[in-house]
Image (cartoon, rainbow, N blue to C red; front, side, top):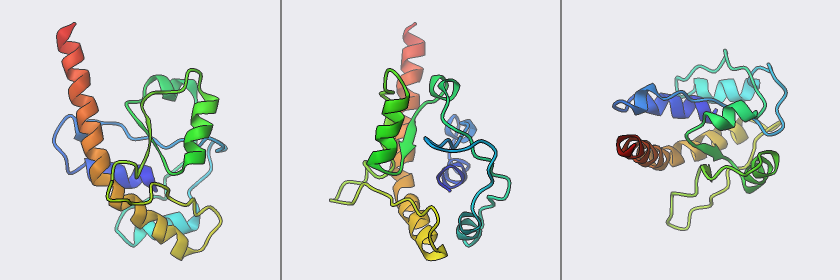
Length: 149
């Protein structure tokens, strides 16, 4: 859901954000699994399609080609840091940039009810504007680094 929501938000941005590739990878995902019916239904309610989703595990190739990682929970972030050596400096919690004392965890709804998936979706949606700002800053920094070379 996070990747589809973020992709949807980036589509409304200017370049280079609009052209960024958005991927989803799980720290304990099996390759090729489709999205759960509740994920599909939770996004369908906000007019985002997820039927074509296919899961993929985290890989070194993804790590090497990723601008930023956004995890739902501390445990997801810890698993990412455990699986990748050295741990990526560009890994964050999706909600860590909200401030205002907001909870930075997004409970994983895996196996839960549609209401749990909708709450997860809404928690992600709330975080997306701050993530766009983070990615914008990372892109600007990368552009400056390329110009300096």
